Picture 1 (tube, one colour):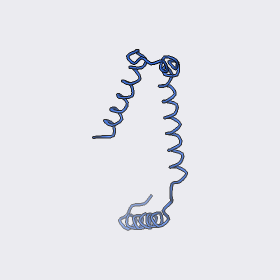
Picture 2 (tube, helix red, strand yellow; picture 1 turned 120 degrees about the vertical axis):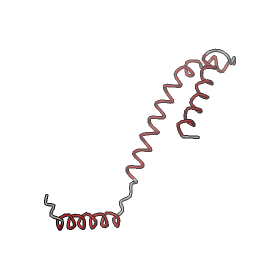
Picture 3 (cartoon, one colour; picture 1 turned 90 degrees about the vertical axis):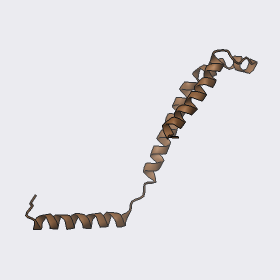
Picture 4 (cartoon, one colour; picture 1 turned 60 degrees about the vertical axis):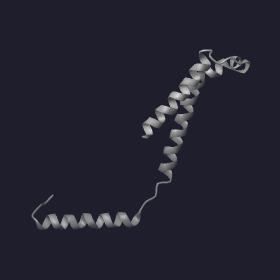
Length: 92
């Protein structure tokens, strides 16, 4: 199962549950008392998901590790490629 299919499955289940509450298919005094919260809950969930996404992105950016050995190796390969191209007559 792909990640997209997982997201679509969960989202459709949540939307079906929300629609059953809003549509009046489930009767309960607590639900009827909190109908305003139930109606705006998708907006609240989108805002919370946005905050979660920004938090995860910022955390991964701030904890990104530098690999000094790989950077040095890459610089050596670039210098070697420049020497090789210069020996074949390419000038820049």
